[in-house]
Image 1 (cartoon, rainbow, N blue to C red):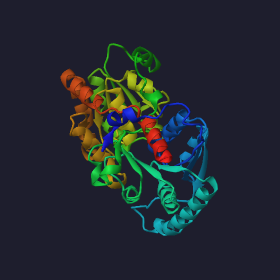
Image 2 (cartoon, helix red, strand yellow; image 1 turned 135 degrees about the vertical axis):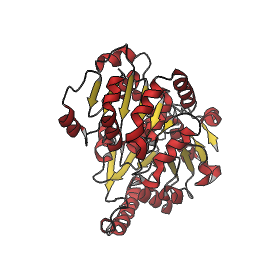
Image 3 (cartoon, rainbow, N blue to C red; image 1 turned 120 degrees about the vertical axis):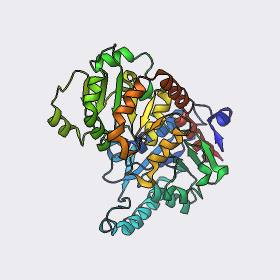
Image 4 (spheres, rainbow, N blue to C red; image 1 turned 60 degrees about the vertical axis):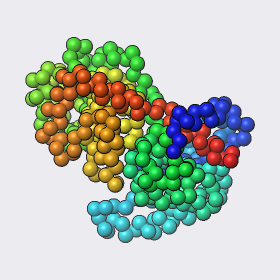
Length: 385
């Protein structure tokens, strides 16, 4: 398996790869964790060659159908859904939708005539990459997690390249085709240098108190919210500050319970529009362990407590978190133990400077900040070969 360091000397020039105007399809989405990396790869491809034509293929009704056009790219939707593990009846139409989606994907390939395809995960990625394999279009898989899902394992057998973020992925894919690139990140979110005071000013926090950032993603995380709610008295008694991003699903209920101005040291936010400033303000971070989030946390190099969501396919968030735990790069708390232990553990870490330094140093060693450029270069190499 190659990694970023090994392939650095094989990079293509960042401007004008012959002005050939290659056509690339990028498929997948469903969550920000898939969409933002996909857009980052698209931007990197355009940077390599501005004449590159890019078409996204997503799933109708999913987030990518809004986010991708907002980023300036065309997208076509497939009528596809995932398998619903908690309801047999919701899966009745899945085979029909899958067949229809493969047929539409074949039509898209016929019309667009791509030189290559990229799959980033999500419902649309499977039908599009399968159609690409039927039409002999070379494709690359960007596997974000430390545990590959069933679809990617199957599609990986014919992929020209599989770009991964964790070691040990030869368990799932042909070793010779694996490249360790890391996961593309939103670079504006990790640009935190010199922003600490600006961040404290934005959130109206004191420079003389320590700060915990709690983030459960745009939708929020019930367990994290319940854990903070259960430990608010401890947090206030410890004289520390928190930036508490609840997510839009839970924000209203929490505000109704606590009020708009619960305590001057508690900042309750539905969504964090400036992730860079939230990261910059924090002394330690409490988070779920989606692959995209972990990629950002590695780059910002701050001590982190990971509470993986158990409600995801293949329990991949737990496996992502354990990959960091093995390197002593994060504190791990199981979802079931969070309400009882999270706040106590966070306060202990906040007062242990030596533990914070070890965690910061170790998570920083795992950072791969140029994943978007490296993946784009691999796509272009695949095209030209």
